[in-house]
Length: 283
Image (tube, rainbow, N blue to C red; front, side, top):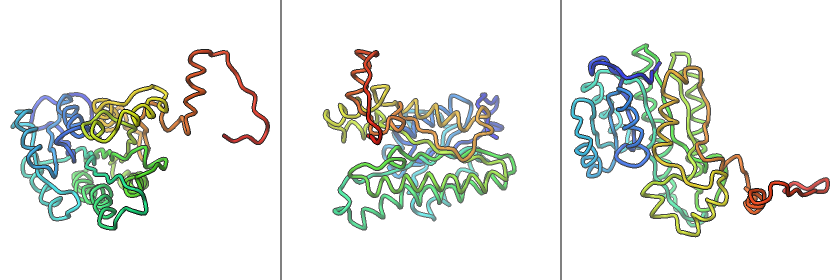
C-alpha cells in the first residue's frame, strides 16, 4: 500500500505514474507526489509541453518524462518498460489523460466519438492493464486513481462523448477495484467539477463562469492543487481502506442537483425565508 510519508532514499522510494502529466491537474499531481517523496513518471502525448515541464522541474534523478499516446497499446507498453528500466517499480497510477469535444449530440461525428473514448476510456483501461499488472506481480499492493468528471455523474449539453467516457470510467473503476483489491491494489476515482485550468480559461466564457458560480455552493472553481490533494490522499496510507469509491471534488456542484441558485442566494441574504410547497411538487 502506498504511504504519504516521504521516503529517505531514491532507490527505495515509491514510484508514481501520471498520465496527462505535462500540465494542469496532471502536473499538480506530479508535484504532490514529488513533495511526498515519490519518484514520478509523467506521461503525455504533447511532447513539446512535456519537455518544457521536465526542464522546468529540473529533477533528473526523480522525474521521468515519456511521450505516450495512452490510446495506443504499443506506446503504453513501451512506457511501462521505460518506467521499470528507470525506476524498477510502480506503486501508484493516476489515469488523468483526457480530451473533450464540445458539440451537440447529433453533430458529433463517429471519429470525434472514437477520439474521446479512445483517449479517456481506452487509455484508462490500457494503462491500468499494464501498470496494474506490475503492481499485482510485485506483491506490494498499490493505488490507482482515475480522473473522471462531474459530467460522468450528471448529464449536460455538448458532452455526449466526453460525459459518456467519464461515466464509463467510473464503472470501470469499480470493476478493477473488485478484482485488484484481492491483490492489495486499491482503485478509486475522482469526479472533478469545474477546475481553473488553461483549458477552462479558453472554453468557459464569462456567462458560463457566472452560471457555474451560481450553481456551485462554494461559489468558485476548484484548483489543480485541490484535485491533486484529493488524488494524493486516495493514494496514501490514510486511505488504506477506501476502494472502489467515487469522490466528487466539486465544491458541492453534484450535491446541489439543479441548484436553484436563486433560492440559495435568497437564503444567504435572508436565512429566515421559508417556502411551503404543496404535496406532489418535485422541483
